[in-house]
Length: 110
Length: 115
Picture (cartoon, rainbow over the protein chains, first blue to last red):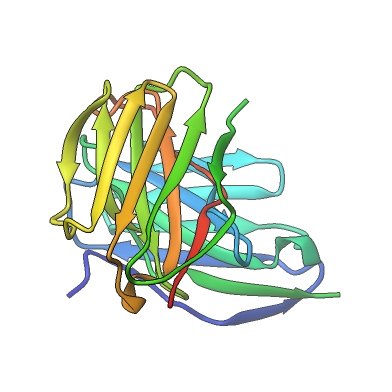
């Protein structure tokens, strides 16, 4: 069983939709949670990071962590075609080693 | 400024060639990382340097040789690669390796093709 599970999609939504991306994990030692966005043939871009259970909002993006359920989510409101990318969840314990999900490929159609 | 730069953007090399990938950051970060990413897969950690010393080597074959000449630069020397080594090679940096509340920032990557 993988430590981090993420549905690879692909996920296709119309412009303006609310997008929900999710990851589950099995290692209760994970303390730090990140979302990276990766455009095709580019490096991952750090989108959001959270360190505790609850919600963190940044513009159209909301990151949610539920440590009791070992579940994290990223919500994108009013999605735009420019949001089309692969979204990688990542998490770590107190060390530096990131454990990534497989990535969800998102397409937002105009 | 959260920029990590990598050169070259693309590299094609034969199995007998020797080449190097370069990574640079000017954010004052003291931890730098090399990752390998195959198509439609997440990045896989290869090496970690902390304060210019190698702290993690993820059992990477010796045909990959990292070097950290100073706190801003990270190199990856390549020799006698195999076609299966073709991938996107990503560099990342972070403030520290073993402190909370830092995160890793990635460069754009070098797309390597081994023929």
